[in-house]
Length: 381
Image 1 (cartoon, rainbow, N blue to C red):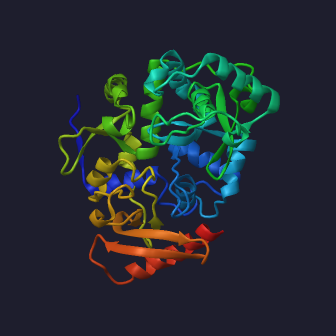
Image 2: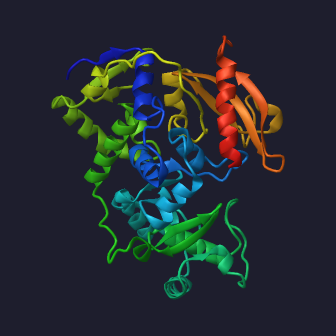
Image 3: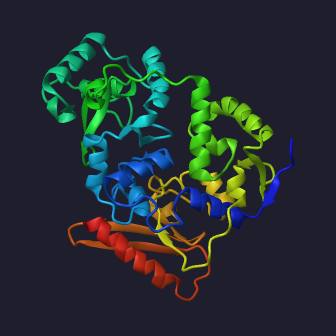
């Protein structure tokens, strides 16, 4: 086994930013095709309900597509059908071309519903639901008005039995979310929505492990077992032999990240050979806390030295950065955290708290304020 290549954190950051396409002004172009390309490259774009600023899925895409419009994602999901919603480490938009990867989890849930559901869906009622959707077309929870209510089985549950049946259909792959109106989901038969006679065959364990490794190398640049299998740590056992084989074939290079010797990392040779970009004015990004660059908190701390705090569910008196603090990336540094809120009635973006994470320097605040103005225009568009 060849010895690891030692690299400084700055080089590791550059590789990750390049892989995340945060070092380019418009890496995916514009329009609906850019949305498809961004989701395909990143592998997933996380969905979240919090909307003190624009919801995370739109925010993440806006960060990489300067002229992004919300309608572009709607078209990709509902018309082009190039992306769909499913569970990764959280609910996310994923490429339709990867459906077979997620069909594994769908079949596992059908075989053992209790892995996700507290109570089993009544078979007769579920069959009736599928017949109704087949007959009437896509339906939302609002189309199930008159039904006896039940007690919630968890905090985010619903008292409508139909919602549990819709969720079951979604997680086993019979149904897909064909469109959204805000956070209101419309469900349709998956085969009808995608135009399939038969659903794609589920990936094997080996194919799944290969998918995880390829996705991580593409979107992270320098990877670890934890970063590859984020959200499914049991998959490490299948991924490690692929890494070892790739190292033997010199397709991957072991990497030792300065200050983090205990965590093994790997990279493709081309990533390590890539020349450093020419100096230019550092790009400024106001990131979602659910951005792929931020969501893996330990990796973020190792590469950027910033331990981000998500405090939406922390009591107000114990918050440090604020209810929904957004990390601010300038060049390859996370320099501040901004607790922002969109006042949609007054049509303005409010900075509720500005926390510097580095010593303020000439021109830094002005550069962030310029990006804040662009971010505000996006919020109010």
